[in-house]
Length: 614
Image (cartoon, rainbow, N blue to C red):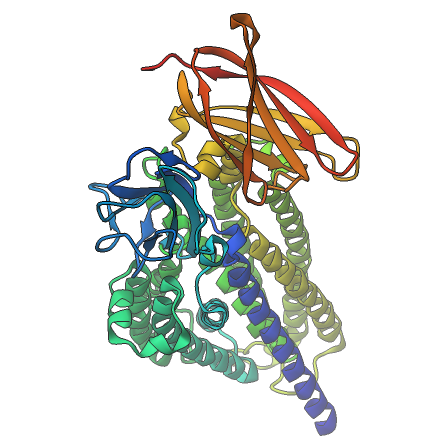
């Protein structure tokens, strides 16, 4: 009997270790996926001078407009001349009354040639984003600056350690709050209580250590510095003055009352009082808010007046529900052999509420990120959302069986305990013996509950993995906006309100020969216009082709073929020299796309050129 008990204990520890690793992996997947530079949600929306522009006079400033509020760090914007020498004065600052428009003054007397603008800022969801583009004064010239090398600045070691700590922080938060809720609301006894207390203490330590590490690394991560810069006092000072730094400081401060709460309120006893439950809920929501305000919920949409004040509490509730559920499963699964039927049933009720909150808040977040119903199937974000919804439906079905098994286990245990209670007038405790064997009926139901909970764990990890992919994918609203915008918006950087554009599907007939091209003009009025071209694949992502050309004509006014040479600026992005479209009207634009040596197709459409002054 003792040997069998030791074997079960060893197996329970192995299960607990595997569950902890799965939870940590899920947390890492969330943040590593969200930190992918190629999928960052902050975008450069416009610039002045524009990408590829040839200015007749040297500009006094460089202005960058982002699609959301950003945070400036040291050397946020660099402007380099053809020799690679800096020509900016001072540091980049926000334009008056805006946290989206960044300006930096330039030195006077700039020489003719091509200049490079490199920028690195932190988006509203705490992701470092960077890029580079060129403009010219007078005429284009060779440049000693490698713009592609400047587009991604930063130490990869810093990025990897930073992302790892974010994953550890999320997993530790789930263990701390989930184990705390399990202890407070499910009231386990014996070994299951001891295991939950250890998880809570480990989660508390993980949140504290990860927060301290993130404070140290955020400066080098946001500014693109090396790992050794963590010891620089001014870097740490700028971190503490940032939005994320203030959120991490609040997280550390909230851990003090959390420790006191764990020590004084989670001892064996009866159900917690109303004030204890309320205090614990406020504490947990406060901790969750330190993630929400620096994540996607904290990046508001301008068209929604109360977007952030609603999104942050909803996202905090979503995080708390996930943490209660996953952390509670981490406590329950290894302890199922010894926990009481009452404990299992209490967790079943808690999990039911958690799933309901997760579904409701998840629906709100989905609505917030989706532009329209067609985006569910027409965007990568929407398709991932459908996969997640399917997995959540599976979890709900499995949770239904888990709850039914927990009720059966409690009913079977109560039925077996009834005769004993009749003989013994003293109040009976929960019927499972401390370390002894269950009755056959209880054992059979307990095994079924263990299988359903294990299935729930496996599917929940899959849900978190898909959530990781969602976090790292541009929201459907942004993807649809990028696909609808012309090249002047996303490649050449002109405001959408001043741009004329047209989208044309093409099919060259060869492998990978289908897609769409988007031609844009800025300012879109009669006179000289910047021309830009974007090439999209069938998946909506930018792609390169072997060759692309653009020409314009206005047959009704007798204006014939006007060819515009294009310059490749990056994946699927092409810019053209200024075209003289001197007459307002509906111009005919023809794009020739060649995807291989023999596969080529011309597509034609119309683009509006407005009268000058409109």
